[in-house]
Length: 274
Image 1 (tube, rainbow, N blue to C red):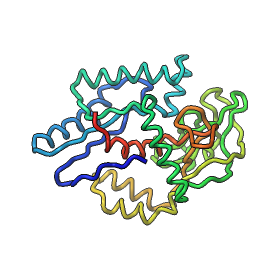
Image 2: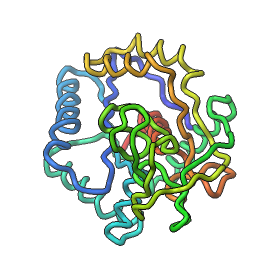
Image 3: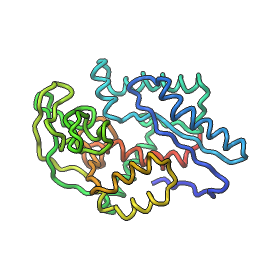
Image 4: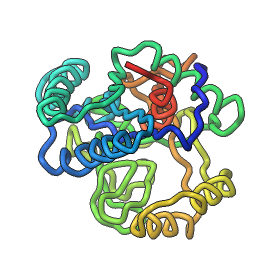
């Protein structure tokens, strides 16, 4: 794994902002919320003589890229290229100036870093391999997760896509959706028993609680954190049965969960300079 440069916090400021998914262009809310705000903050820090490293990129391997490609009859790579170039053009037009902008599908060094990051989690038994039921669409011979499936949230019962409920904000692992339906065929789906990797967050509770207690955040985020910590922390799919994403070393049929990839991405970007 590439070593991240150690810096003295009192002299340096690292500003990162969640990467936009290239399945569409940015609207004004996208732009004004995270991106213009973070750019303004980075400029303010520079005016105060701090060394700033301001980073973002595109979230290329999201399942929503693949589903958008199927919708517009483009490959996932073509979808990333089309919308990714439009997103970067919008940033340039509005003067959002990143010190490093990551293009995941083009950066082989990044992909290797993510794979190494993932395997360290496996080697340290933070991520474990086990056999579990996963949703499977017989008509398309496709495993379903996130943007590929919808059903009733197991927590609040509202309709939602897999892996995260827009209504209550709680996690589902897709296979625990109630009455799951394929977003491709609009038909009920089956279960198939498969081996893949999982991250058991409850086993990391002491570390999660420590970070939560020591991190400054706004009140709404604190309330959300307390809500999550009041329950048993979920077991999260660390890999998915898919061909779109960064492959799990030694597993030709699996890719690293994009959210775990994104966590590794922040570490990677912290060490980059354009």
